[in-house]
Image (cartoon, rainbow, N blue to C red; front, side, top):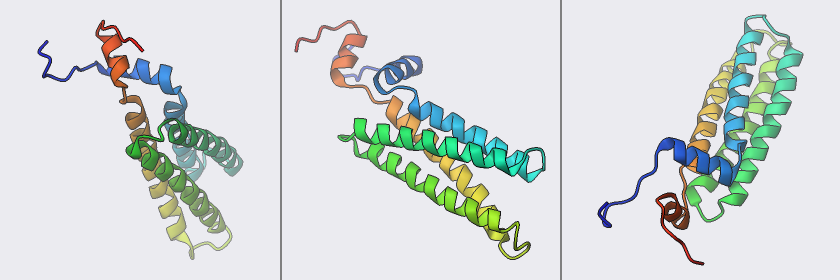
Length: 156
């Protein structure tokens, strides 16, 4: 390989490295948000109760806060990851407030319907932000680790 060409790693190698370096939190946050979205759809079509959705929201919020905090603290030097982590956490809290408004729509039927629509749209945006955070976190590879991945020797 020419030394002027950048070295590349496969997606699988980057994910393995990312899991070893950063842990499973960003992937778990994306999975939890996807499951919570499925619960939301089940509630809106009457296949699940509101309590299940509320319990899922509590668990999902905890997982997202864990992932966002971990990504923020482990990547202080990377502005893109910091911004994505803070954006994910802020979208999550906005989602919670819109969910409270959507719940109030049950008591005042017909007057606050936009809360339900905004809650669903914010859920999709939050899921997108979590996937973005996972991609940003797992694609980072430090230069010394890149050398080791290609059989180089790094002397500290």
